[in-house]
Length: 563
Image (tube, rainbow, N blue to C red; front, side, top):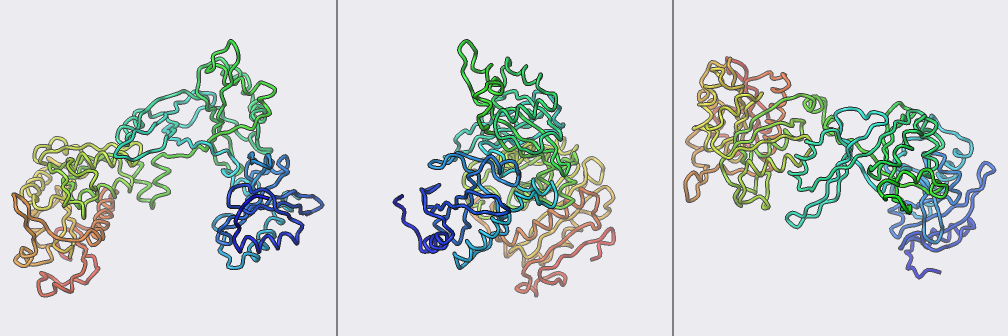
């Protein structure tokens, strides 16, 4: 018997399973109590292995079937795999993870788990499922998971065509270790830009693609021979034979239609075989046609989409998804605590094309409320932010300029919206830019700023229709009277070292509202000229220019500027 130390819960479950004629065997993995026995349901016998982790009942038991030839026909079942001491076993998905509740009583857990297992075995024997689509709910758990290939394609895969597989190998930066990425793409330039920003070395190989359509269904393939049979049924055998003499990668990509109509993509990893007199690279696909090799279980890869449309659909509301599909460009002037966090939030909201302008260098005293951290101290803020944002998604195009905004009038004249978040430099820049907007020499502009202690956050929209002066409107929006506000400003030794104190948490509440206001403007949903959000005002009631409620929002309307 294995020399294992079992927990009290494991021992109580062992006693329960002994009553069901299960006996202890060598563990599937270290730390597990593994029991083997047989159950009979609907006249069929299931040779079963149960593995119990050492944190039972916090974790649920794992069921394996020894009768692999039967169970791999059903896609609800995990794919068979070789397990030391047992040979080939197949894990059984008896319950979705979100239904695996915690049991205080380990015997109750194993009792209920066995009921679920017997019910599944009965359904497998009788073929009782609600629909074919239900069988594929856990399809990924069946497919081999040696690799993951990320699909970033602007065009659909075309049957019997070669596609580019980009291999991104990690480059060690700042003592961080990245993992290799495999990306299926028709947009090589986007991948190259991402790799440069994210710190990857890039190489490219060519892979064949075959669309199996609806012929992929049951029984699911398990060996290279099974894959060959599927390809033969779809009339693609001639194409596969041609691949034997071509220098291609180890991956064969397959597409097929699930019962619910969704197109699913997977990849078969074709192992290298060496034949005397043949080049190794040109003999890979002979594996499908050799008698011994055809019986070998294949390994493969999940193929997961990383298109912006898919990621944004999962990561946001309808605005975010719609925004990611539009060719919009913005400019953010000022990459300090407000500008840097706005840039990040807008990137995550679907915008992929932006200009960042800031002449300043990130200092250690900035990072308490800045998006960037110590690893970027000493870098120009705009350059560091562009590098970070370009590594967030593939397809990002963030340009950085490190001079004063007045020097980049031409660069910002062709964007859809200018956002200013300049802080103490605002008086020298924003009124001038506002006049250029009103004279139709620049696109619309949104000014964003915070008051001391983050008591209020403001966003004010300027376009060619605005009649009042920029100073008149922004002065009216300021919540604190100017004399008192000036006393809250902090100063340090040196030129231009004044700043408004506020915490990152307090600022973030206002910046979120600014980001929503920006998206409304871009999507054509703006209903007001300006927005003010208010934080903790009770400490400053005697210094307010106009009455407000704590944690409220005020919308400043069109030309009347009334609240």
